[in-house]
Length: 271
Image (cartoon, rainbow, N blue to C red; front, side, top):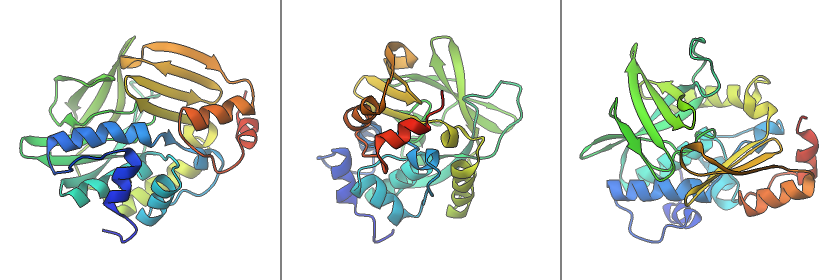
């Protein structure tokens, strides 16, 4: 464990004040608190700033500077916290399918998630999928619907790959596919570099933020700001008109202090 990581600082950052033991209750509690306190955001990629995923850099950004981050940052931080508590954790990697046609070829491994082994079996933990943030760990069991406060999910298996689907208003939608082969830091460094620099990746060309808070999902895609209930049911949506409105949403809804003025970010949004 890096000297940069302090469990007590992380727990304070996400607002956890109780006991933390390596059990399902703690895992569920932390998994719910994390995406409420630390928003998904890829401002650095969008602004073409480097994204560093060594643990010291992640702690400085997400814990000390109270920024958000994307999957590699979020789940590497979550992994460090779980291991410090005593959980048995394995880093995994997946291929994102959220925006992909069903018959399209598989893309590279650009998403990170975690396997957490408990006495009653393995669980999938993921606090960094910014198209449909998970608010709870899921049992690594296929062909059963698993409900959380904010969604309904299902794991299926085909051709040696596990597929995670989310129930939406129009039916099931695939989030990503993955296998259970452990990944090392070098695997994530490669995926992080590709994800944060490739001009054809959404995170480098669109402003994307998401936060789960209680029974609400807040999402910002460019200037489109929406609030959803469980399973993606839209409650409100509006278009941000200017930089002042963007700055207000970043500060008050996503709890993020951007690395540059909101006006600079707003001017970079297309359309």
